[in-house]
Length: 107
Image (tube, rainbow, N blue to C red; front, side, top):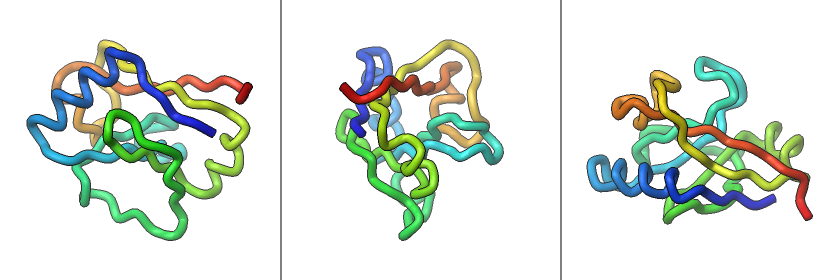
């Protein structure tokens, strides 16, 4: 599995990092924000043994739960950004956009 980001997503990450400092992503498993990637300030989410570091996007770690990783491990993930509010806990919602992920089978 790999994770990458579009130029638009990288731009939003940079903007958020300038305002909030170090960040992290966690691909939610369906609670509260559905299956959306959540962007938080580093330290706002306790990463534990049940989480897997999938990769790094624009100097930002991207995690998901071990259970989800077992399902997604055959896919590559692309992080993108769309207009409109996303999850209420994710930092980008304050600027009117939301992070989304798409996946494709590993080549």
